[in-house]
Amino acid sequence: MNATSSTLSLETPHGEAKVHLHAVAQPRAMLVLGHGAGGGVAAPDLVAATKAALAERVSVALVEQPYRVSGRRSPAPARQLDAAWTAVVEQLRVGELSGLPLLVGGRSAGARVACRTAEATGAVGVLCLAFPLQPPARRTGAASPSRLPELEAVTAPLLVVQGARDRFGIPTASARRRVAQVAGDHGLKTDLDAVAAAVREWLADIL
Image (cartoon, rainbow, N blue to C red; front, side, top):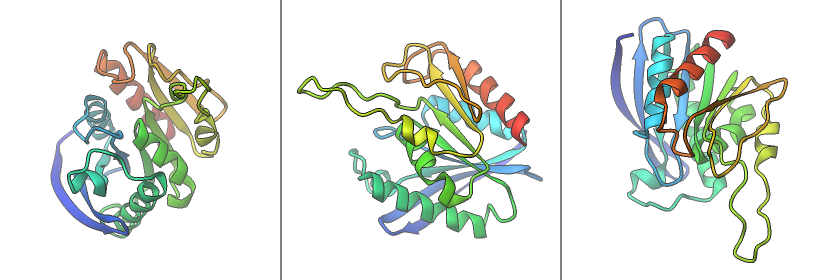
């Protein structure tokens, strides 16, 4: 599927965000994706998901959070990530996203942001690539709290694509949550074709 690409700079309460837009003709929906904590929008699984969405006639917006745009490596606090993300989605809704069903998602930390804000943004579906379910134990040896409540709070159809050897664990499926296990670890680089296939199948089902 041919797509036109452009880059937008959008203001948020926490600085400028960049949106890398890949628009198809007569789109069925738009998928807005966020990056991981230490990586960018060129992560292999995000690229695979983008290609899969475009093949299903879904336009894609890859969002660079303000801390990345300003050159910082360490992620901003969750509340700032969520506020910046929501501000970007609201601007896309009145612009490039106008009139289209909204799907949101991301990889790792970006998936968490999409889950936490899914209700506020009015998303009709959520895509989680390498959701970091269970963080490593703390230095004291105490277990860190699971992030499962963030997944459970999503009421829209949700797809989790998880590496079978992901050190953060693998969430279970539920009535609303589909879980696709693919070869590999948290990086989801081992079988990108399987990542893309899972995304395409899910998009075909929910749209």
